[in-house]
Image 1 (cartoon, one colour):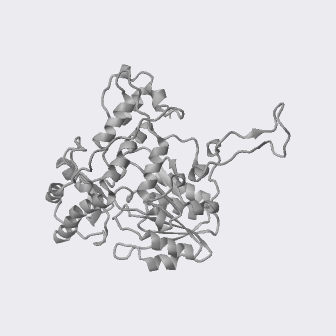
Image 2 (cartoon, rainbow, N blue to C red):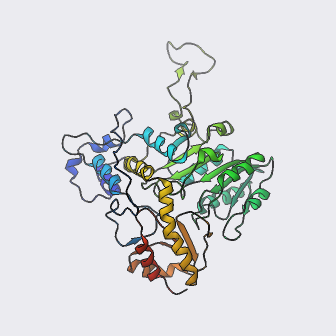
Image 3 (cartoon, rainbow, N blue to C red):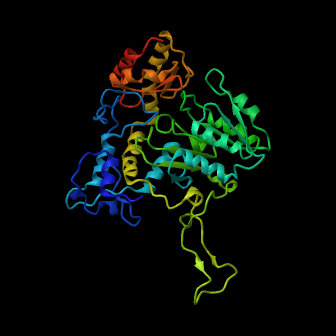
Length: 424
């Protein structure tokens, strides 16, 4: 993407900066690969939750992190350093390797198992293609609580000969025994689930899902966009073969995504496409004057280690997204996802108790530890103006209301939400 100075300003949401101060930043901030990266941000002691101080620009009540999470002041400051460095000061340059390593730590994986891709669904599409899908007669198992974009993808693949089994909800959850029955030994190629459902926050036991699938010869893909950053997530220990996570939700940045592929599972995947950036060096040629003879016209090229060797496509994430991640990932780990989860649960538990009393049927399992809670409300979209007028941000669609609590929310936010709810 051609990052002009104006595009940087607009994308960062920083307001009308003096363009003359940006100079030649667009070329620099495109993260020229040879440039040295600035040091990682220095964080103080973990803040006490709720941490409203780190999100000073939030107005009203925002219980919508499951849709888009605001950036913190710390991330915005790094973006400002990237976009408009002080006179005579080199611009901040994010370090992609450090960001990959921090995400790997967050989900208990190895850096080589992580690569950048443009979005979560593109990552899942890459995994499906790397498995040879859609192939006539091949079998995929997914469920009613997986991401709707992925459901559309597999539905379209059905038209091309793929066989798909959809596991239905029971009591607002997907039962392991139903998933087990759906997986056909020796036939099912992929089991695709969401670690935490975008619909209602239901959480799969990924370790058990992987055990069941692997016993029948299937690989497991997990969409972790609604889990990474808000709940403890041990992808390395789960046995899951592949996962993907965009950064604009609970990772508190935007504009890119991480794909994970387990090192021991890579041999079962083929590159979904080919690009020179998947290689560590340029090849030796055997077709030009003075080239040595050889069987092939090019050889000695070596793929990059791990996920980049499968999925690199010379894709450079937005420098703004990377700058935001340079702060947000250490910020999340500094607090600790266990504390983030526990804080959200105090607020979500209040909603789980109060909503049924007001006549709203819960769609979220009562024992779920996700920061998401969803309830049924017919024609929910028609109530959007009332919430807008009260400056309460939640998601209303598909005859349900979805609320999501984050590090900056407190009980006053919950009570303001409850005050706006229409009669059920």
